[in-house]
Image (cartoon, rainbow, N blue to C red; front, side):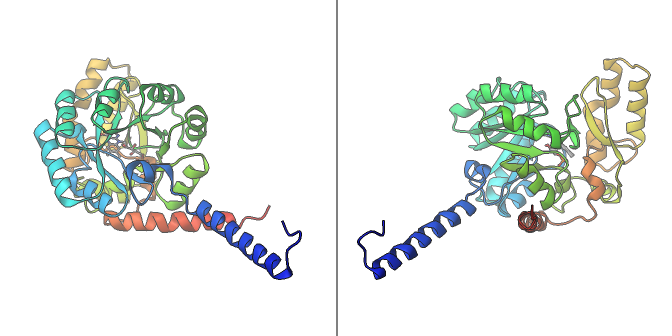
Length: 345
Ligand SMILES: Cc1cc2nc3c(=O)[nH]c(=O)nc-3n(C[C@H](O)[C@H](O)[C@H](O)COP(=O)(O)O)c2cc1C
């Protein structure tokens, strides 16, 4: 390269080469996580769709703060869902989505409303990803499905979803029977799939976000932390129960019916005892009922109601605005990435 060049030209060549290397390095550092491109959002944070807790107020607050807000349709009648979508559209110009648990009644009506209202992102869960993915995609909707094991992750990829949420045993709400933790699940799912991977379960800080990225995630889905925000529609009693809870205060129960992680209150003990004495699925179903979730999480009955929350609740100590939660997560995330870089080997 330097042959037959004057010393001045050689010097210019060296400076130019250094300049090009710097640009390449900068471009490498500035590469956005895959989910930011997929959803057209600033930060790789998805606020989970959650029954009784994530209506339009929370979803729009998260989207306005640079994350992806999801309306939890699982506790909504069809016309209530329509109202939440319309209010969310008024409250934010940023992308937002709807979470649709596929086993709930009214599913056809929910899908119809989502399409009619022009929602562009849908997270499906608790059901077969093959049932609705192609129909949603034909309407230009980005589809993501939630799984708790590798087998279902492969099924989702085959069904043509755009990304997968891998949710570990720590998570709040309904969960897998396998009890695979997020730490173990993520690398296994990452190895098996070629599409973007979103980590869920136990993420309550920027440091745990960084851990998820280290294990192969392209973004995170966070539930419990957003239940304890000002904009969540959870009852104040439930929010306070979360910030008062300690390590070990939640447990996965109803493993034979539909495994769910709950705060260990009076209602939990009733169903846990019933399961242990071998109650039939019908009896358990009756004890559980949808009304119990509303009673606990939306109406604030801390004894008789069902309180779905993740293990990470033991680390949540304050009720904050959703935008502050996002800001703190991103600050901690960046600081953690920097501190990892300091490690000398
Ligand atoms: C109160 C509550 C309600 C939930 N409801 C739903 C739901 O309706 N649909 C769903 O797919 N997941 C639901 N989940 C699971 C979340 O979407 C998410 O994957 C989980 O909360 C992530 O784990 P984390 O709680 O440790 O952040 C719920 C979780 C909580 C805490």
